[in-house]
Amino acid sequence: MSKPPAGTTRKGMFSRNDYLAPLPIPTGEKPCDVLNTIWRKNDVFIDIGNYSIGSAVMVMWPMVMLFLAMSFFTRNLNSDFSQDVLILGACIMALPIFWFIRGLFREVPLPVRFNRQRREVCVPRDNGEYWIVPWETVTAAATQHSSVSQGGRVTMGLLVIGFENPDPTAGEDNRHFSLGFPCGGGTTAMALWECMRSYMEIGPQVLPQTNDFEGGREKLRGRGVFWGTTCAYLDGIRQYWVAQEFGKAVWLVIGGILLNGPLAMMLQTWKLSPPPDLSHPDILEWSKPLPPEQWAQRSPALAAAIAQREAELAAQAEASA
Image (cartoon, rainbow, N blue to C red; front, top):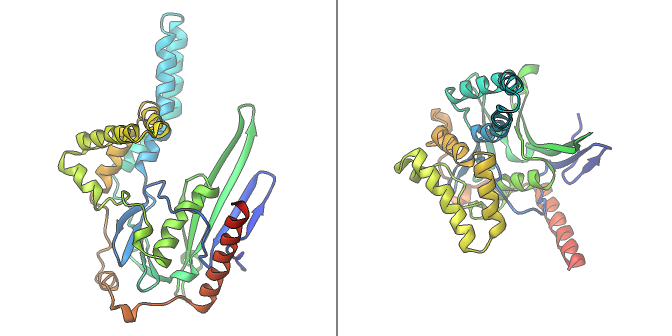
């Protein structure tokens, strides 16, 4: 099956697909790890994971608070209605909460490792197998879908990254693997993809400095997960306020109240400090640094595509200036 070239956009009445790779050319967006997917990074590789227990908290918390608030404020007006609201909320939220609690006590899935010196990607599979996939064969697409109801237009989207088993004898059920990141699609998905693409094509210096569970999150563990996370959250509000970035400070306050941001951060830190590592001896050897003269280089096709895309982005910047 043919793959749309990178840079292609296909729009429908209620959908949009932006194809980002192959070949992994610049998107024009600044790298931004909106989902804290970078679990480990150094000069040789980054580990990318899509386990996000914190996102589950921020999705369920508003619904739980809504049902509790409705029941609380109607208890003196209509006790039967108040009780019915609690029963309805329990019925709706019971299954999500069950899966959430189950997920808390399950092992965190292993991350995908991007090795920039070898220009390869290590993809761990559930059966203990590891795929070593050439970087330039990785596929990426930002998908976005909209629906319209009485409440208005709702848009959802994903960044989907795909890998193909390099073993030509693999069975049909073991040929493809993909990761989905619920980041909203569009430019947000492109910014998330840029974290991986820019790391592989430019270097670790382009990545956000704070999103590293092996580094910054360990400091939180030293003070206790709950207290350290709460202090870090409050300190973030203070820093934005001092820097006169009042919008970001207010957003953190709103997120703390309506989405329970501190609890989400605490659980995420608890599960990912430290993040799971790839321990197979062959992968440990594969992850060791190489002398610069042994580093893999871009293919001529990718080099030409990147040069063309950079020229297009420069022309667009000049036109908008």
